[in-house]
Length: 611
Image (cartoon, rainbow, N blue to C red; front, side, top):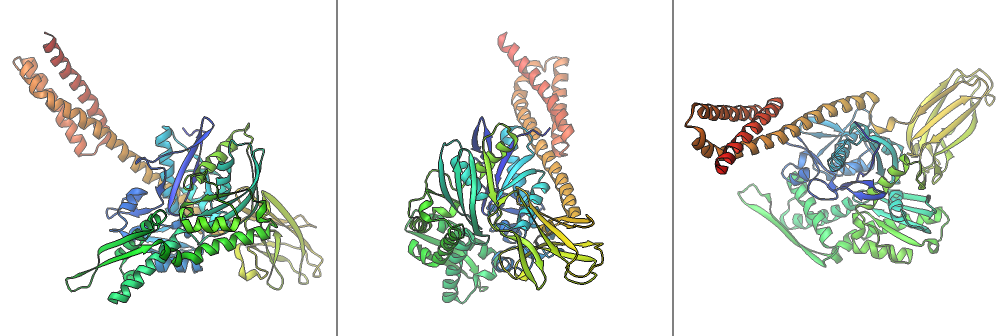
């Protein structure tokens, strides 16, 4: 039976992390290998088995085409967007167009939606928590980049549903980090959270005081992160190799995955070392029975030269965020660095230079977001909690009006949850319906913003243009999910939508995926259960086998003894047959019989020794 415990999950681009509040203290839950973070990787093995986390990463080079990394960069995106085009050119797995102008991934002969892939990672986090707690967990708080739009947030919620989680709140990653930073501390200060992870960048400014965490301003780039730094190293290696051998390594999927692997390692090493050796023997075959090797030395200075513009982009976003919120840098009292990429010395240096202070060293960049999510989860179910989180919407919301213009109803950086209404009039004589196009973005031109959804209000009374008044109301939930309502003020006629279209999945598809995933997990749990009982049975079998010679010598002289030994051998044979047949019920029964046999054998030996 599910409990009211709530886990906090940081669903990261490169790694994911899960935490929970225990006895008032937030703690990160380690996975089976003892690691506090798990690679956000999913693969389909040759036998069709699903692999997630470290096991997926270990086989990524030999199974590159069927191993997904950085799926978070694609979640909630539309087919044909610049981010998707960039991903198609750089990843070894196959990205295909979905039926709803969305993005899907083909692994072996199966097509998966991005929320499905993300669901498998979330489910792994759920497993890690359940193994640690010894009980089922359903409720969760999941974090997303602050600059995620409505479609990306909805797709993340869909991923949670497919994973069997009740996502009670979606919160922004920088906000979660600030929660962890300020939790249990009696502080009043204005802080900036600089969050540069594997795939995304966010900057948020918060006011913290008396348990209230109020976001003042937020901005970011959902396609800027460690993956781009890796790409610069890969391009440098590919360019040098092509110059020397006239061969493009990007055309070989295994070589591309090896380059990705070594680029990530080199980047990490250069956070502490001044230079690193990159050595990839047998990187590619020339087809003439000879293989070529790649060997280069990468210095920290060269890496900084290759990636300087990426770091500068983050600083420009920080500058614009402060300007938009009318905040002077001198007002910032602490800078919190979040995300693995903030370990890069150049990032720390430029961040300190911009804000005019050394960043705070008191938080763990890989764990702080999950900790903050768990704190928010605990606060949501604890009526006595004095933690209050006031977040903002990262993008302006509104509708298209006559002339193709965008009319904002809710401005960027408005505190959520919030509602805003505006009255519009008909633009044609005898107009009986009005089409509402719901948009998100900052451009004055409607076409340059993100279309979240559309609906039609029909049955308006016939009248000259400008006489019929239609009230449009926007509501944004605490999760950042948008709903829109249009109402004829004279008749009270109403039409509304909750904007979900851009998640890329229909409700029927989500339900089918939930059912399929339940079936798959039942198989997995059954397999795990069988494995547990198999190991127990084989352990007892080994003990019995070791005792057979001794027991046989003691009791085989009588008919009773020979019969007992014969029965014992029969029990062992039935146990082996049950194990070979992978029959869980038979193995459970056999284990009980083996236990009785082992106890009988131990009793015989014990009595003989006592005598």
